[in-house]
Image (cartoon, rainbow, N blue to C red):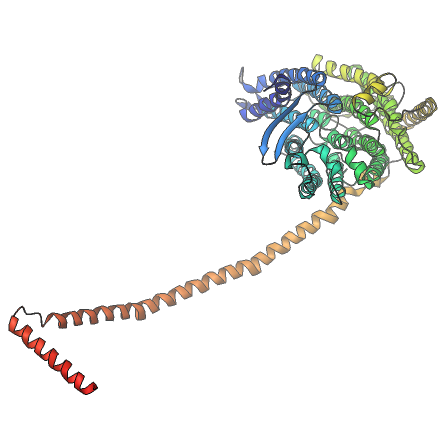
Length: 633
């Protein structure tokens, strides 16, 4: 194994192996939800996980500089191939950095079942790293499946409670429906004419755009389905709402640089396939833009902080999906990286207030950021960045994506979605930083549940710094360098007039929303996430359950009855056959045996051993033979 290859394998296997050991290790005697054995795995798990995450970040930075590749056999014709190029380099460093900061934060906030939690988080990070570096469908599918399974386990981490378990199931089944698209793409790659390439080459992600005939269209449809499911784009967005029942560090990682982001990343990676299919580019662009618009309205109507942030995640990933469809790979990458810092920061801040004040309700949290400056100031930076206020990060990255949009109708939708971003972020700013009653008087404080000290302030401060400066990736001179690194040097950039106009819009919309936050409209259809889950139940869940009940009734009334009747008939046939055997076959066998025995006795009678009797018998036989010959002549 070469040095660069070993580096890449270490990057993905270190968190995977450590996470697996932690998740299976237990943690000592459990008392009141904590692991209290001195020196036990439960107490050591946070330190081990943070140390591994720190080493993983160092390996990610090294891999981004070295650009290693790795290959291993997996299945016939389908090797595991990983590689770090310009696009994946930015993503793996982002995933590792956000993962480290979230784990540091979780070390001070997670008290119950620590080994399982930190083990699952490391496994989750490892699966995301493999997803980001996969260059073949086999590697991508493996990581995609592990990522989905660990996300289910993390959302349903409090599995003894019904609501988190149901939320994990909803998230898993919804994304699982989209995941089938990757198998459709793999089937298209295998079914397409071989040409001059082998099976292993056909399963390479770069080879999908070169498929002949209708196969690239089928592959593109499958990739869009899988990406829209993971990125919570319409119509799959509702699973993010239910995922809020997971611990806040899970939300911070899952909604920022991990699973949801991987849906947008997959489309950025497979932009050549979207172009090859033709229609797929437009579908991605319009799908992302409409999601950004619709889920922006959903976010604006929310009364719960984490629900607002969840809806904004789907909306912001809509910009990344739009970038993949419009051909702004560098802009989409910059937005994905900057959004990871912004959204992990906001979710961790929400986690602090949930732990200390016991509520996520925006009304009950009024003024919370003013009273808790250590959390409130980083939250303000993240919220202003989310609004697109200059010079913070998401202002420039949105404009970089907007520059690639050449359809006036699509441009208008994207601009409206950007204004909605400022409105829902301004609503959060107005409520949490505005005047209000002491939240501790109106919220249910959880004694001992707070997160304090450097385990809280360090991650929030570093993420706030990232939220403030990562927009430089979309500004000269870093924008040109990023385009060169991701292999898109000719992509357009936003002009000064566009950037000034969007800045004015963002400032005006944010100020308006902050000033009128308690009076902003909250229509029921938006608060209910467009009734997407209701529609999913009507279209898929209830018909599936009805079909299951019908099949169960068919099984009970037809198949079970037929099986029971067949068994009864077979038993009766066996009884009849037994009777026939006893009265017929057995009697015939005994008769044959008796006849044979009688004939044997007759045959033994002439055998006396006296010679004159044998002569007499021979004479009789010869006489009979002579008579027979005379009669037959």
